[in-house]
Image (cartoon, rainbow, N blue to C red; front, side, top):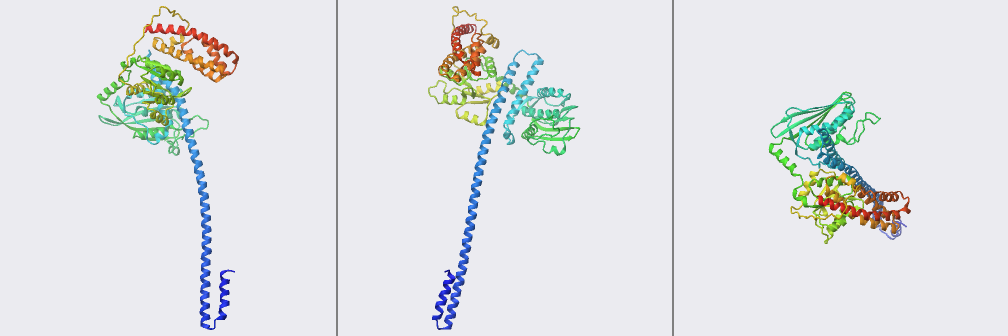
Length: 595
């Protein structure tokens, strides 16, 4: 029975008991009023319950949606983190793979530059070195596009020769222009200063990109660089660089997006005009960073003109003299001749570069090609500076440095350290800073930068080393045809030859021990690692009787063939190594006397 029925029952039972009609009417009215109140209350209750149900449903839906969104956000976060990690790993890999061979190119060009060359050859070296220097900047920019876009790229203000700058620029692009049968024209005004103050590398990069672009999209005619003086006073000058070609031109609709990243003219489907579409984007960013302007005028089928306006300083005589002194000072001090340095590096081209570089300053440079070799040397000898690569065949150079810094008993615990790495990145640099590493240099680098960094961290107090004189009359030093490759590579440099002998003498006992361990434990990986590691040293020194033995062992392990022959080859290697060690000691003593 509901509420209305109860009220009606009450009314039916009560009315017969009331005798007064007025009282009956009043009672009836009161009951009806109560009924209406109950009806309103019931309606409100039902509405409240309905609203509660709706609210609950909305909340449940909202919570469900929020859960879905949370899951989506979590998934997106994981994807973003994975992409960021992949990007970091990719850039580190690309950086290492590009910078390592580029360091070899730069290093060899610096060595060639200081050798006997005619004027034409010297010109070729200038172009190679200039191209490599600018390629390094471009590589760094591609790997750090976010820095360019954020305006964090450093713009240098240093004096440079306009004549040499234009000569280097023309030398780089004229081969490409000639290859397409184009005329390459450079025009400069007579009032162009001999020297300017600005960022030579960035200007080079801007003009090189625009000239290459002109050559790419021009099949006949010419590509020209015209330089105009817009305004000039004693200290400042405004220049306009006009790059003009007689190529295919740019459609007005395409010109609006020509500076966008990864944008290219879609002219032909056969891939003639290929590339990644970063050049003009980088040009635009660099022009903005240098507070300049860039304009484009083009007619389809007739050609294109890019106009870049930039401001430069004009150096005074005192600034030029100061700059010359700074450049001249970037040589090895004579006081460093008695220093002993250790380099951890496994790339042969980098080693040749480093050895010749330090040999030019008569500085002793010892070499370790892996972590294990570096550990042995750091435990035995006190060095004045440690130069370390990061990625080595058997580990990470930063891990070795962390161990060294944390070992209170290590004789080189507080040694000045310079990290030289082709994997230079911000994360790695921060890690290096935490390890109290005084300098962190990305490969490739010019020798002046290394010298400059060394001057910052090296102690002026050099411990003098004394040489030991040895009587060699009891030794037969006739060892031909031994050491032919070593003498050819380091002709006239006995100290470097001695250093290579010491490297071999340090590596040999460990190699023999580990190879024997590999045979005993039937572990091909251990055997092959040390056989392969010492093979390169044997090849550099040129030990003709050991070479065929180590090459066979290395090949058999690599190809997993003739493994039953390894024990016999290993025993023959040990016996021959003992004989070769005697010859090496004799040769070392002869070199030390002659030095």
